Image 1 (tube, rainbow, N blue to C red):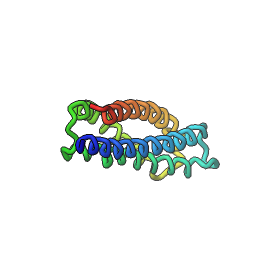
Image 2 (image 1 turned 90 degrees about the vertical axis):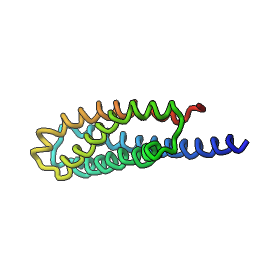
Image 3 (image 1 turned 90 degrees about the horizontal axis):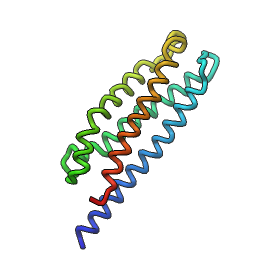
Image 4 (image 1 turned 135 degrees about the vertical axis):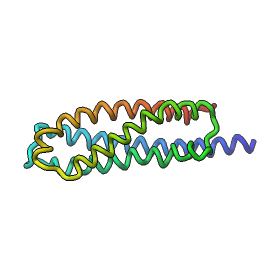
Length: 149
């Protein structure tokens, strides 16, 4: 009986974290679409402000999953084999998307006309693909975390 109550409590916290991450993901996607929708990019558009918002959300989002979920797994508080297997399989690929997100943020921390004209469209195209891959990986982890066993 106590074990079932503990399970329900832990899964409830996990569900809350995942719902928080999904809400953050939605904000990130909206910001991404706002920036990408400005193409062709010109300095007289709100691109600088929207790109800055996207970068902030991007960095916050990729950090959140590490702090909210992976730390728990790394600290050994997660014992379910399915979750541990999924995390071990997913983490290296997730880490590479995190590295990309930090590099993207650093690249566009200062937006110059040259960056605007030459690289932003290509980098946003890559961002769309990388984010789609990341979300797929995260969804697999979320599924494992929310499973009864």
